Image (cartoon, rainbow, N blue to C red; front, side):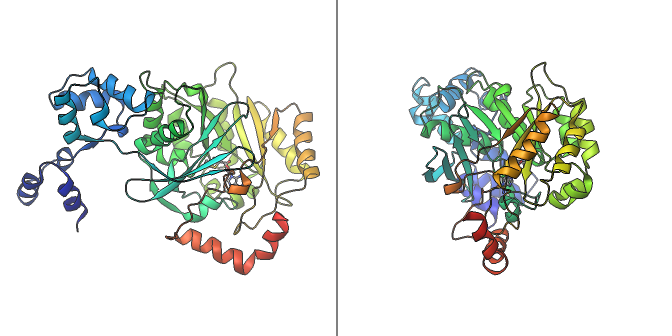
Length: 399
Ligand code: SAH
C-alpha cells in the first residue's frame, strides 16, 4: 500500500484526504496526528493554538513528557478531560521501545531500541566517568565509513528525527530512574550528528527546554568527523554543545585512509575551523584519536599530533581500538598506548586514555551495530569479513 494511503488510514481526515489528493493539491501532513515528542515547545504552542487550544498547555505537556515520563495523553491529568480527548485525536507520542537492555560487568548498560517504523538503534549508559553519561545515536547506521568503525559498515539507513534523538534520553532517563538526576549526553552513538544537522540541533533545543530536562548545552558533547560547513554553522547556534573532533591522524595522507571524508575536508582546514570556533574561557575542544597498532601509533605520529594541536585550546582523548569482527586493525599494546600518551603530555597537551567500557556487551565506541534477523548490507559484509579474511586476526586481538 502506498505510504500516504497507509498513513491516511491512521489519520483523521481519511475521506477528505483522498478526495483532495485526487482533486487539488493539499498539505496532507496537517491531516495526521502530530508526534508531540518531535516538537520544540514553541512549535507545540503553535500547533495547539492552530487547533483552538490554549498556548500554555505546551508547558504542561512538556512536564508530563520529560519531567514525569508520562507519554499517554489520557494520563496527563492536569489537562481537562475534553482537552485530553481532543489532543489524543490530534497528536501521538512516539517513544522508542526497549527491545534489549544489557548490563556490562563494568556497569555500562546498552539499550537496543525499536523506533516506530521498526528500525532499531542503540544507546548506551556509561556510569561514573565520574559523571553519568548517556551516549546517544543521531542516525541509524552512518555514511562516514571510517575504516575502523563497525557502525560505518552498516552504511546510512536513515536520519533520526529530533523526537527520536531526544526520545533516547527520555527512555534512558526513565529506565535508569535518572529523570531528576544530573547526567551528560555525548552524541557519540551511531551516526554522524553533523550529517543530520537540523534534527540534532532541534533535539538539543528540546532537551534544553526549561520545562523538559533543562539540559545545559555545557553537559552535551557533539562528536564529529569534521563536516566543515555544518561545523561553521554550529559556531553560530544559540545552544552550542561542547565539541569533539574525531581526528585519528595528524596528516592528510594517513587520515585520508582512515576517514574517507578527509578527502573533502582536510586536517589543516579542520584545525583552522577549530581555532575559529567560539569557546568559553574554560572549554577545550576534544580531539579523539583511535589508536591502531602499527598504523597511527608511532612516536613520530605523536610528535606530529602535538605540533598540529599547538595553539588550539584542546585536550586529546586517546581511544585504543575496540576490536570487533570485520575490523581489520589491532589494538596497540598498553606500552605503546602509554608511550603515545606520554609524548603528548610532555609537550604540554592534556591527554586522557579512554578506558574501554562495555566491551563484553559491545557497547564500546564504534561497536554499535544493530544485530538482528534483518541484516543490513554492511552487517552482512562485516560477518563475511570476519569468517573469511580476518577471523584469525580478530581472535588474536581478542585473546
Ligand atoms: N560520527 C561521530 C560520532 C560517533 S563515534 C564521530 O566520528 O565523531 C564516537 C567515537 O568513537 C569517534 O571518535 C569514533 O571515531 C570512535 N570509534 C569508532 N569506531 C571505533 C572503534 N572500533 N574503536 C574505538 N573507537 C572507535
